[in-house]
Length: 308
Ligand code: SAM
Image (cartoon, rainbow, N blue to C red):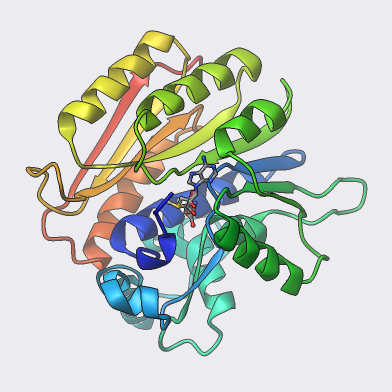
């Protein structure tokens, strides 16, 4: 396990993933009973973009630094995002922007970058009269990274907020053990580093397990837009599993020709929220514009049709 997300946090692909994750979470928590988020590959939860690792690659400069500046510029000309029905595409970024702003109250430059467990923690709901709190279950295998995650959550106030469980364990094994029960509302986020043999097969198995043991369950899987033939084979293997409602959403930022270079963010959703594709078709071009993507492209494909 050599991968450290601190070198890559806030890069353009990370930003696309977190913006989409925020939007999906906001949608799922806007109504309905308690939601469980199971984050199988959680990372450290927070990243200081002035740390040596972040400065060494400088990846956040083309990512969150650009988005943050772009958003501020847009806000000068547009009205602030509101909680009212969506009036401008910029409102699609409001859930993510709110999390970023809370963490960086100084405003002008963005120093602290939230990872997926912190994004979830900020959007999930505390207990309210008669309703239990949402729940975040975050797993991270690397011991030092897990300690950082644990320390972060020790510093955060317990209430008001969702119920939180952190585990130092293998995310795929945790998915088997901790998958929500049929009928429970939840979202599994699977965001592995893709540095070990067999990762794509483990993802296919995870989707099969969700389809069998948690019918109607929801998941979001991040994948790198790199090698087209690998992605094509993976999508075919998912199709062969016959789990209904698999949507592949790809946000390309760079030219797609080379297999050794990350060209963008791919997401496979299991049972995406209703009409998510209509939202992503607006969100991705907005992100591509704000990130100044040299070769933007959006693709939304149902690998298997949804049940409804
Ligand atoms: N989801 C995080 C976010 O969006 O902020 C980033 C996750 S990063 C891409 C992948 C993480 O998975 C790394 O922190 C790595 O240490 C961890 N990891 C690698 N293999 C794992 C496994 N089998 N189970 C759980 N965590 C694992």
